[in-house]
Length: 362
Image (cartoon, rainbow, N blue to C red; front, side, top):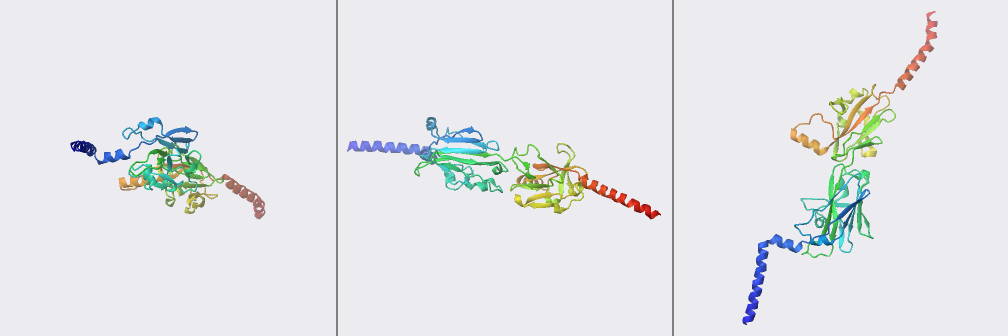
């Protein structure tokens, strides 16, 4: 009996010691101790325009703890590097997001693959990019080696900088064990504003408007479409029937002018909607509508959030300020060919009538 009591006392003491340690550690640390599990560190490398990330648990990963865990790498995608591939260890991990048309986005710092897998931070690529295009990227999967790839075409890059995350999460874990994660954060740079085939496509990233694109309009190339996208507004608006005109070569001394001051024959009907570009504003100058001498104007788009923020700060509409995205439009002088033909016609008519005038004098 004495021996049983001794064993009981020792067991009780051991349990009490463990309980005391756990009580001192606190409930949060207790839970973390139960669920924390270091996941593999993604190893990323560049190959051409594609960034390849591999999620495999190496020996050094086994020693990683919550306190020493490295920040997940951030992959930057742009026009120069427009694709990412994430490879998961197929036997132990599955890819997140599970749907080819989705990405994971951070909400309230809940940027874990488990949360995304539950649908909390998952969003469609169309909503994420906020673009009016059918050329949207999708995740593609290689069943042979567990590679998951996302490739952005030139037209699918966003108008502003975006961030999402994706990666590999362990399978077969119970409720008391946190799933291992190999998470990759992806930063997508905005496209560059450009003019192509008579269409200005605006973007609003930090590096989108380092230079001002230029276009020349004449009788043979007489139209320009302004595509601001869902995140911008045309500036000046087509309803204002105005444009910017600058006195300096570097877009200095700019002011707002009426288009009738630049093109005296201008009418509001010259602004149309481009059905091929989601009904974006399109300036079409008819034959005979060009100015008598060459003129230069600026048109463009202002980012919606910036416009609203500046008006809110000042309480009024901001003074003349060039939009972030703009195009320099050179309007060729009205062709002298028609004028020359008119002069020639009048000259010939005069010569033809001269004999009649002479005859009339007799």
